Image (cartoon, rainbow, N blue to C red; front, top):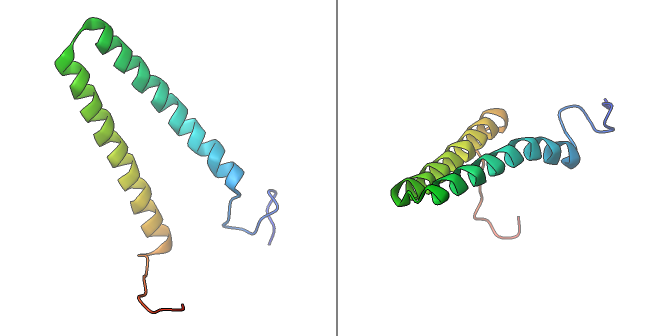
Length: 85
């Protein structure tokens, strides 16, 4: 069955994914850069480094959530060591 995007149900085109990813990534990047600039302007060296740690941990949490959602939707990935498969 075709959807309004011209794909089969359950599959979204790459363009749709990229638009959704941009809606998440752009505000995060802007907020991160603003926070980074403010701390740097204040001359708060420890707060500046703490910000980098928090931002990195936040990115790891977001990645872990995406992995968990993908595993829930599609199950655990399976790998094979057979050659020629």
